[in-house]
Image 1 (cartoon, rainbow, N blue to C red):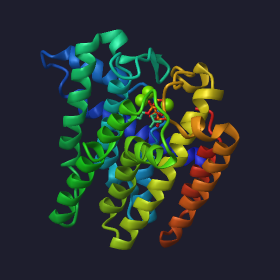
Image 2 (image 1 turned 180 degrees about the vertical axis):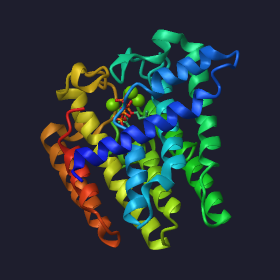
Image 3 (image 1 turned 30 degrees about the horizontal axis):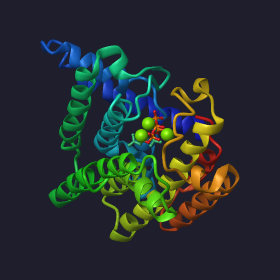
Image 4 (image 1 turned 135 degrees about the vertical axis):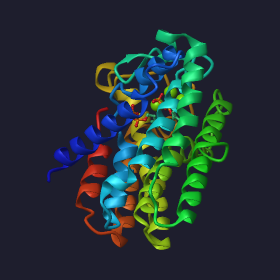
Length: 291
Ligand code: IPE
Ligand code: IPE
Ligand code: MG
Ligand code: MG
Ligand code: MG
């Protein structure tokens, strides 16, 4: 199966699952909340985190569908992070996933609440995972909460805000990016291994793979903020001038090299898995992505 065919299959599966999950709530009186959540959730992001979860599950020798509840949970948390990231009190952006940002359509209060609900509902979705051993489920919940919360994505967003308007060191930028972006990618990859009942070694290798991939991914995002267009990206560009990014420290050329270097390092972490051709091709393609 080609890269594009497999990607399309994963994307179709996760989008159908997410749509279906909320179908049964349609008659609830808080319909506006569900509309706001679906507006961002079904707006067609790249769905990379679900793809990572599915693929790690498959690379551990299990059928990839087993990772569905975890893939969906991470995508819900990621979508909430984007809704809040775009708020006027944060990055104050008007476009996301090719449409107006959530608060531009539903107002700030509903956008905050849609994010809150996606975060909380994600744990309900994750709890439906069918695992061989109940200890695996408690590990999964602790991975998900740690990667999303104060030690993970939220912690990184805080460092990102606190570092605005001052020059950070490389070490500080690494600390920001590993949390704000790396942590949820880590959740996706390691939860794929957990869904498959993978080994301790595979869990550790997935976390290292995620750390390198997360850095490559965020540096490419920062490069695209400079060289991408709003049409390609589906979100505002040229908005990071006060942000601490590697592009600010090292410039575009060096950053292109860093993306390739981190991508190579990520690929080396796949040696303990089987069927790694798709993942290798996928992350190579991300190094030169335009969206
Ligand atoms: C955007 O993530 C936020 C970052 C961590 C850079 P994505 O680029 O994966 O966004 P979507 O999911 O495709 O919209
Ligand atoms: C945000 O990073 C990462 C999140 C936790 C949402 P950015 O602020 O660079 O993401 P974009 O460029 O708005 O997607
Ligand atoms: Mg931001
Ligand atoms: Mg932003
Ligand atoms: Mg960005």
